[in-house]
Structures are given as C-alpha cells and as structure tokens.
Image (cartoon, rainbow, N blue to C red):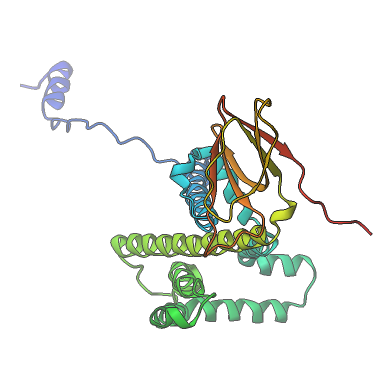
Length: 307
C-alpha cells in the first residue's frame, strides 16, 4: 500500500543525519590598520619611549653628578626629574638622526612627489635593497669593533649601533629575496629583542658621554653659576681648600660668613656647593644643610660682559 504524504514527510525527517554540535567561534581579530591596532601600536611605542627616556635620564644624571663625586640616589631625584633631564640629549644631531630615520623609508615617495626623474628613484630603491640585503655585513662589522673597544673611544657607541641597525634591516621586506620562506617566529622575536638591547646600550653610552661632557663644561664655568653665601652661628669645618670665612663679631647672631662657593644643586634643604677653582681630582664637594644655625643666601654669579 502506498504511504500517505504525512508518513513520507516523517520518514524524510527521520533520515536526516544529526547536525554537528556548534562550537563557540573565536572573537574576530582586528583587521590590519584598524583603530584598535593603531592604539596598541601607539601605546607600545609610548611605553618603550618612556622607559628609554627614564633610563637615559638616569644614566645622564648619574654621569653628570658622578663627575662631582655625588650619587644620583643619594641626592634623591624622582622619576619625573630623570625623564626631564633626559631631554638634554635631544640636541640637534640627535634630532637630525631621528628625522632621517623616519624619513628614509618614505624617501622614494618624497622624491617622486618632488618630480625627481624615475631612473634616479629606481637607482635609490636598488641601493636601499642592496644595503638591506647586506645587513649581515653590518652585524659582522659591529661585532668586529667590540674587541677594539679601548681603541675606538669616544666613538665606541658605533659598534652596538651597527649591530642594532643590521638586525633591524634584516626584518625589512627589501632584505628578503622573493620566494624566500620567512624565518620562524622565535628567531624573529630573538632578533628584535637583541636589536632593542643594543639600542639601549647605544643610548646608555651616548647619555653617559653627554653627562660627563656637560659636567666638565660646567666645572670650567663655575664662576657663572649661582653664588652661595653661608651664614652660621658657629664656625663650620670645611675640608681644604675651603671657602673664604669672615668673622662678623661676637654680638652678631650669624657670626661667621662663608663666601666663594657656587651652587651645584639643591635638594630637601641640602645645598651641594663647590668652591671656586674646583678641581675634580683633588677638591671635595660640600653638602650644607639649611637649619636654625645656618642661613643660606643665593646670589647671582659672575656674568660675562656683553659687547
């Protein structure tokens, strides 16, 4: 006997295979160039730049005050002051190098916009690819300079800089010939980490050299710094050569007056002062605490004549 339409419909329904259980789908990744990716890049770059500025500020400050026999932690600089002091490294040469570094990847587009002939732009692209593919030579050159550390002063920073530049160039598109398989992720991560460490080393070397250079310059111009006059109720004991002292008389509250000092830095009512004609290898740095028995007067230093 023939089956009714309802029975045939039920049979078709029973013959359907069971559907596979649904698995929760992973959240979609943000597309390249999306606002989320841009924000992550900006936050990461800002964090790295902030940490680098703090590190550079510490190295610079420690080298500067170490020249005057002082320790940065003993003086008590806070984080914000160290970051601000790192801005002293933003001299014209450093800014020029930074601008050129940011401009080099876009140089062909810039030359094209300036209507430079196409064959010159093509030659520039070929030269850039040749330099990128020779990144191993830069790494080897930097590594070869490291054993010559004592003989390449004061340009020792060029050795880690060559290594860092070579490692970074190795990750550019121009350094990879067409059809070459990309390196494994662990190798790329290790290479970028090594490049970052070498760049931090370069910053430390440059910051230290800059700090010592500025300290030598300021030590040679002490007469122009803020003059410090110390008034005390009792005679103070200064290690030689010591400042000039004047006795103002028994009836004066602040009886002794010391002059011939210049201010280096002031922190928490402690004045770090240097005598005129201070010499690094022989003379001390005086630390004077301002309290009820001592009064500090700050006066302008000797200014150069104009005209």
